[in-house]
Image (cartoon, rainbow, N blue to C red; front, top):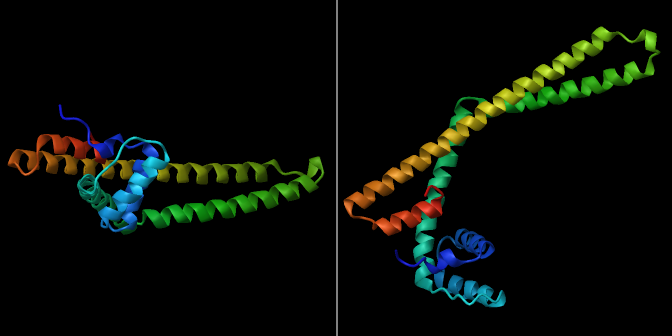
Length: 187
């Protein structure tokens, strides 16, 4: 088994910094990036030094991962928008806020009344309304979350399939494909 790439040996916080820096710099300026990264490594007392070519190779893989992530996010946002789920979630939120305000006003007025003047039917009706809106909102959020997870899994499966096809076609070495899987989180 080949030794791990130097980029994979970076401490988590520096790897996160590298990923952010790659995005900020538009996946370019690798010489400056290597210099900045090695300065940070030296500052933290890490005995590791990474060359421009290693950062470039990692940056190329990471750029592709970011591209796939952005495409998946855009598709999911479009799908939700096309199906009105975003607006429905916002409507639930507004409705819940309105009912909460009403509940507060009713409770305030009930608290100002004498015990014998309180109408239990009003309190029951208000409680039922709150419960129904909360349940409806929760169900919608669960449906939306399940759909998001399904989309992410489908995208991961598609990316894994593309990697497998590239390995079979000889376009990508098996070890590189495995590293790509690890980077993209579906190893």
